[in-house]
View 1 (cartoon, rainbow, N blue to C red):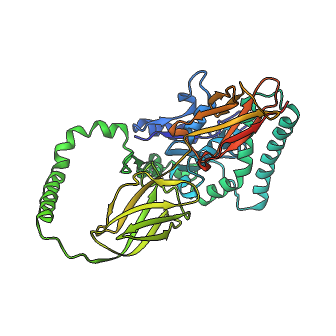
View 2 (tube, rainbow, N blue to C red):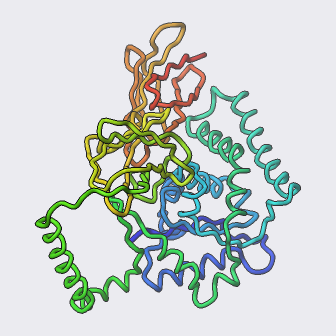
View 3 (spheres, rainbow, N blue to C red):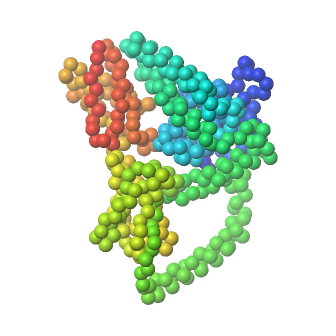
Length: 416
């Protein structure tokens, strides 16, 4: 069962009226009592746990309850959690919407320019403070402090987009949300099926329901077994009967998706699908839904498929042949190549510089005597762009963006 995370601002003594945290407390207890697997910082972070790791874990979740309040929108921790959700959704509005379960604790009307200006101004001020500190004290700051500046910068640069996504989602206020023991949000959680490695979807089932399944299997699955036998008989008939005459199929839809499953539409309105059939190559745009359409294909045709895009996205199964069937659907899993490692070279005064600490998030490596370094990225943390930090005693700490999918090595010149 997928974990259910909470992203929210804690209550404080300066609040007026009911605490903003009460709805979170009530919802947490209700989900817990129904057997859902719930994760919340106050109970699951643990003594001496790293907050940054926990925020990254929230960003990777598939069910995240976001309790929106004024304090939340002013909090670097909360907003970085929201940014991480967006980043793990490839900054795709629809993927973001699939993960986020919004709760409007305090209504903030971002459709009004004055309100939006207030928050943009706040984050611009925070960014300028850190920017000035970096410029004046770069030699005295730690890599972690540079990373904190990087987070503030990302929030500042993306706040407008995130605010627009939040107001475009139909969220509920606490009074409506808590009706019938939070029935509406539990329904949304259940419908937000988790995706398996094979691309199939499984509903989120409360723990108590799972415990009661065993005794019901026989009665529940008798119709399924009977249906399977009928289908098997039908398949045998289809194999043994004479081959039918091929018939024209008006169109075929190719759904391009990522490794996370069929709901992971990673190329929306980007690139093309290439289809080879009978020695002919067909080409079709990938639309805003991640689908490419082909016309005038025949049932039974064998085709090979791949993608054409400026970034090196390739089919996970490039040698596979796909059979055109009556439903006209093909699911094409693709992956961005070359993002599993970041390589490069560090120089000073046109010479290789060794023993430079190179950092990407929590991953580290040191440059060798030739100034070269390599950081291998775990699959769960791979992405299109990385911010790489370089530090060495006696030198200014530097950062640089890396785009490993381009195949170009990162070259950084250190300064004293």
